[in-house]
Length: 301
Image (cartoon, rainbow, N blue to C red; front, side, top):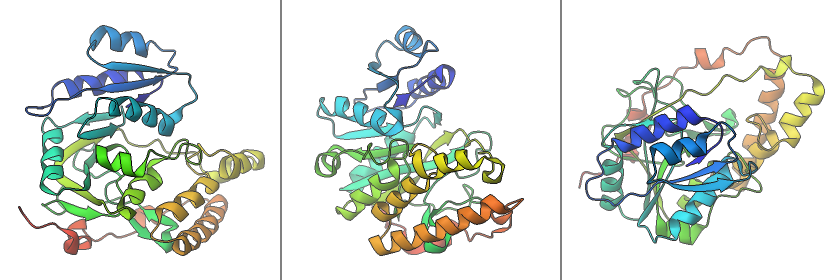
C-alpha cells in the first residue's frame, strides 16, 4: 500500500485491516510512505508496529510506490500479493473470500466488489467494460449490490484499489510500468496479465468500501496553458490524453481498438471543454451487470 500525507485515512485503513478475519493465511502488511510530512510514518510506527514500513522520497507516486511494496513483499516468497489503496475500509471476510476464490480458480487474479463508503450499496469502479465509443474503459455509474451477479464472474480489467495477485503472475508478467503510467499503472497491468493467460475474476462476496473520487474542475474553466499541461504533458493528471492513449493501446483488446478509442476520447474531451454542462452520465441508462456479464459467471465448485 503506497501512502502520502493522508495520515488519518491511512490509520483508518490499518484499523480496518486489523479487524479482518485472516484465519489460515499468514498475512504481512507493507506500506510505502512516499515522503509524507504529516506524521504518517511516526503514527504507523506507534499504532501498528507490526507493519513493514518502507520510505520513499516523495517522487514514487501510486505506480512505483506500489511496485516498491511488491518488490519488498516478494522477498518473503508469498503465495499472493494484495495491492490496495489506503482510502479503503474492508469487510471482515473480504480477504478469506478472495483467497478462497483464487484457490478455487487457479491462475486467476481476483478483485472484490468495490463500493462507495458514503453509499455502501453503490458500486465503485468495478468491472468496467471496453467501449470504443466511450473512449476506452467505461465505468458504471448506477450499479448496486443488487444488480451484480451473485457468483464470481470474469472481467477484462480489475482496477488497482484492491487486487489479489498470485506471486507467480508477478514473476511472469513483471511489475506495473511506472515510466509510462506514474499514477495509473493499473490501467494496463491486469489486462497484461489476462493477455498472458490469467483469468481476471470479481468475487461479489468480497467487499471493500472506498472513498469517492474527487470531482475535477471542468476543463472549460481552465487556462489554455493549464489545459496543455494536464492534457498532454503531465502523465500524472487524471485527464492526461497521452497517458490515456498509452493505456488504451496497451490495456485495450488490441492496438487498433486502442487507437480508435483514443481518437474518440480526444474528440469527447474537446467537446467537454466547450460544453457548459455534461449531463451524459446522469442521462445514460445501464443494464444490470447480472445481465451484462451473464455469460461470464463462473460455475460453482
